[in-house]
Image (tube, rainbow, N blue to C red):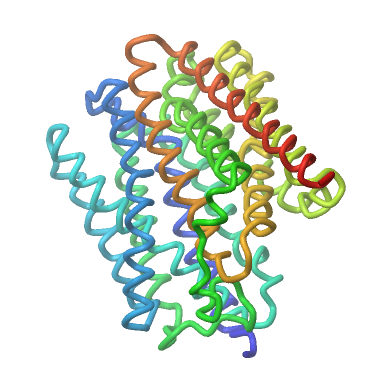
Length: 396
């Protein structure tokens, strides 16, 4: 299938830009908005945890609809529309439970759209899937632009500008979804993981292997350790006198470091191997949380800690995907990657947000970052167990 140059020229990159531009406003600064609305840390952690919770339900729902009824972009457009309409209700809600229902609605739709859109992107790339990173990078550009650009607006106009900014990005996201041509069904490249030819293969025998469930448990702990960072990093820095402009710049720096490492990780994997790199991720991530928690007044320390986002997210994501690729056969590859996403980013995200809210409120900010560091060190122990098991298997 030839590459659809019209779709890839600006329409598909435009959707990635809008989707992650909304995330570049929501993830760093929505906790500040919730704080301004009078929510305490435990409730902020609970509300932000809904973003992870809906990752468990939204993508499978839209995937099932697209598989059964075809026309995948129709469902992406519907999800984008519901995200826009659901978020618009933020302007009318009052109280905790109203906000809970609104966040459940728009995050469910928002999280549901991207996995199916990724499949559409691969469809249009056809026999040139290596071009994916050149398309997906526009999502990182969108995140950096808004994370960096929203800070001065907040300093000038206050947190009331946040809902309007997110709403604007959701509107752009819907416009880009309407611009992407639909297809009746998704034609994936021959031999692609998760095709129907391998769909009957059982995944449970793989999951019963200790190295698999230990690695997935380590991934859950790694993502859970990010809960304090995602929910309270901006609140923490603001409490220590840093401007919203600097806060946005630090978030943007982390994403830039992530983009940079994605350009290099294909060289690191064959040289060092998956498990040694994952162990390095765990150790460096623990250092990152200790530095942020202990030195919030040092801009230099915060900058260096943000550079470690290259490992705590970028390398972690790449080596986790590769680990699943190596251990799940072709017919179970799609389900293996879905499990990684659900257990790590879904369940790990929910656990991390909710624990962070409770610890932040009842124990304190430093303790919350130190407990995050302890979580990821526990994950490092699990990775060392997996390394030992795989060395023993190699000898035998």
